[in-house]
Length: 109
Image (cartoon, one colour):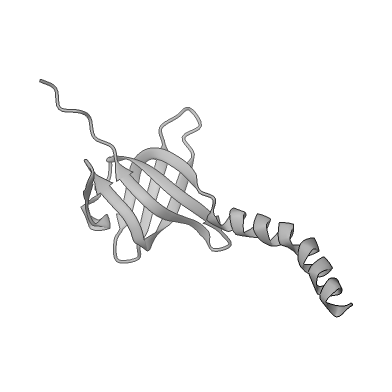
């Protein structure tokens, strides 16, 4: 009887646990122009390139994938004015960047 009760409880909470896990791992994207970089604090501020011109500041995680032209770079290599795409997770502490890609124009031939 105890085993049945435990199974019923697990079945009842499994969807809640799964939904919570999915929320914690789902990511969003934000594209714009770099307003500021503080590599020592791991912060990146971006203004969206749209009519709304939303601004966001991200904490860049230590294991974030930071790239330019498919090459890994350091956060300190990003410059004010660079166009970037940021993949991030929302957390209670604010948005955490898990990937930052500096967008470059293709070379013209």
